[in-house]
Image 1 (cartoon, protein in one colour):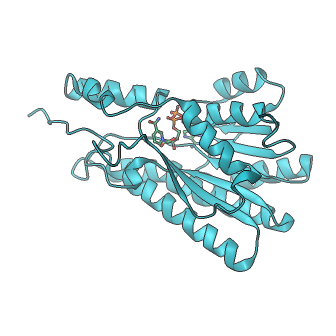
Image 2: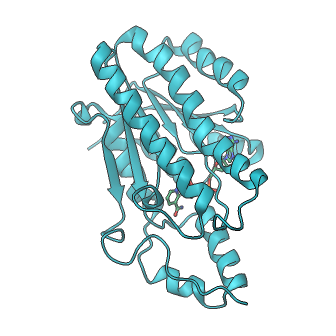
Length: 261
Ligand SMILES: NC(=O)c1ccc[n+]([C@@H]2O[C@H](COP(=O)([O-])OP(=O)(O)OC[C@H]3O[C@@H](n4cnc5c(N)ncnc54)[C@H](O)[C@@H]3O)[C@@H](O)[C@H]2O)c1
């Protein structure tokens, strides 16, 4: 099937890499004009240059003053924003005992603050047209916690709450804007590669153990987001869509890593 999001205008944060990039390409393939928003200008421009339906917009999601011009610029050009995907994120492998205030604030700035600002400004423009779809990237870490991804898990739980609050407000007020979260298990991206490297450095062999749980491909998540972005999901609002091939039901989001003394 083609054209599942034909004529839609989408903004994807963290669109230069990993799941954001795969989603940008998938939405473009199905007929959307897609703005890739990222702090990585080199990669963002490279991805945008590879497809006529992709454009790059510089955006640090932690900065509310950058959100306004980014979204208003798209609306000025196209008259609307149909889809926002909040995919920008960073992870730190640290338990509560190891998490400094700096790490806590850094992870939450990108994940929690970025999703808050994105939802706030997208809702502002989407409700004027009475339609729109916001997709927030959560994780299996926001289904249950992670012993050594404390700030990340907390941020993803906050984003899950943001999602449901936006969805219920929109339904109550009749804004016509849907807001859903996606909860991937481990997916093969640069972020996971970084996690593997750090885990293995701390506990040799742990990356292999991690991969035994399940590892998906970015396209698996991109296809879920495509569905949520499209009108096919018009009755799906406030939902938490899990893409983990049962890993939350079985092994868990992270394997047990013995800390070296
Ligand atoms: N890969 C996985 O296994 C996995 C699993 C569950 C959830 N997730 C979530 O999916 C999302 C994407 O992860 P990924 O694996 O594609 O990671 P990635 O590292 O490949 O991509 C993340 C992107 O976010 C961008 N980014 C970081 N800080 C930013 C900021 N302040 N403003 C704008 N952009 C910023 C980076 O430049 C990068 O392009 C994240 O929210 C992550 O937590 C990933």
